[in-house]
Amino acid sequence: MAQNEKLAELSEAGVAVWLDDLSRDRIRSGNLQSLVDEHSVVGVTTNPTIFAAAISGSDSYDDQLHAMAVRKVSVEEALRTITAADVRDACDLLAPVAQRQPGDGRVSLEVAPGLAHDTDATAAEAAHLWWLVDRPNLFIKIPATEEGLSAITTSIARGISVNVTLIFSPERYRAVMDAYLSGLEQRLAEDPDAELSHIASVASFFVSRVDTEIDKRLEKAGADPSLKGKAALANAQLAYQAYEEVFSSDRWKALEDEGARPQRPLWASTGVKNPDYPDTLYVSELVAPGTVNTMPEKTLMAYADHGSPGTPVQKTYEEAAATMKAVADAGVDLDDVFRVIEDEGVQKFADSWDELTASVREQLEDKA
Image (cartoon, rainbow, N blue to C red; front, top):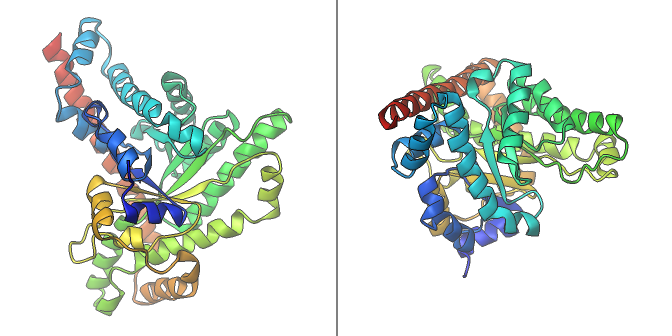
């Protein structure tokens, strides 16, 4: 089957196209397979919000819920079982992609967001989910909170592939890259013959939420309106500059010589929140080699229809730095912005998880 030209061109430029959505219906109807066949999709990301929408909006889960209800399975266990089943099936569907393109063909499953500030519990949950899904092309999603960083290192050292999520600032992103390299170093220290090539990682750098928060503050400060809608891209472009620096360092080269693979930057939250902005803004302007862009289906289809690559990220660093300086000079406290949106991000997923828990609890009671 022919791939959509615009998405194929994006892939050629080094951007792996992933879908930011998953549901049992999407797998069973053949929709996910057709996105792989016709829209260059080579990976899937999920989060608690996505699963909440999938499970509450479908009767495809009824039989499984009934079977768990009669076995009197706990809500937590039911949730893990349901989400792991969907992710496992998606991993199997994408296995041919994973064999063809190591690092792609991946599906992400997130640790329970309520654990975001508990290092040990996060690492334990990551190991359990890795065991439960039991597929080599799985990613376990761990939030990049300060407490999450050590859990990332521990998980990588155990040979678990990790998608680090909820990264908002280049500074935190540097800490994430450090956590990845530390995990690989730890694995080698424990076993000098350890195979590093099968460990993969991506770092999910969030985009649109940065504009949402900064635009609001620029407006409040009465700043130059032309600054609006610029910070999220500039912030991400500077993150890529940090990536280039870290993954050309001697520290990285020593690990690469042992077979390690770079942790790719993944652009997340790439659907525009402001209808005044072009609907492909956070795809067109983040074209760079060795990256992933995970898109909601609406954004994916918009790019397939009328997307075109903008300025390559590697040519934007000076302008990006100037933009962030102008935003700060306009009175926006960037440290506070990143703190607020990280807290909101963790809270949003925790709320979705609670919603999902309540919905599954209700369905288990109905089906018992």
